Image 1 (cartoon, rainbow, N blue to C red):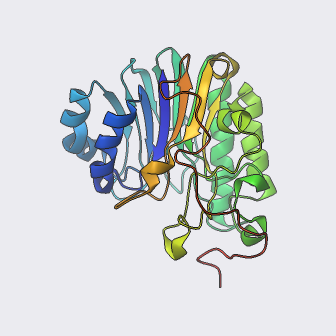
Image 2: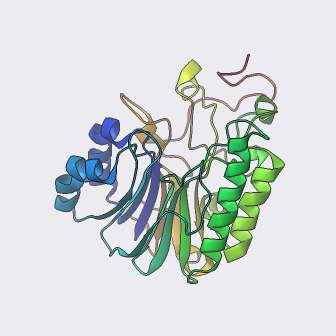
Length: 288
């Protein structure tokens, strides 16, 4: 079974990239984030195309912002939209959807960004992660949490830790919240576990040529419980989907269970050509 996650940054804009990618990679389960469509608009846009490819759909969206969806060829049962009793800003946003796919309790997440450390949105992010942890912990043993978590787990998951000083995504509180989520269900970071020493990014800012310079972050994760993680045959980032015209600023992350159709290939497909950045040599595009 092939499971993938992809922040498409507007599914309407990404249709010309999404449908050919589905045909090429043939994932059995796909979790999408930042769909930016209501459920009705998502259905109107994609239901025929996805149905023709054998996918059932569980979408949880809102107009213009946020939005998540699970596409599945291997069943889609017991769908839960949102996080029960989860926090809002001020109301609950469309940031999580859960369903059982192929016998695995699958939770697709788009974690709040946090904006600025110690801001109201940052506190909301931490509360949201705590609510997610409680929901996942109470679920079945075969579980997977995947999506855009808006946290780089370690300094090795950003191109230059010095560039991120004073920013969200890398603060101790966020990383501690991510660790607590993993500990609550013994969730394993399957990409990092498979490639412990490799440079692996999943997001590159559109500005300042960040992708071509390979100045990115690894913030799109697949976290799998033991019964799922032990089935891993390959875990990789489809960097090709970030290239070319009209891409998302994120690349898909793929987990192959039981067998690897493309083989146990490297952490990035294709690998970046740029050399690793020297620490302290770059700034974020939005930095003064």
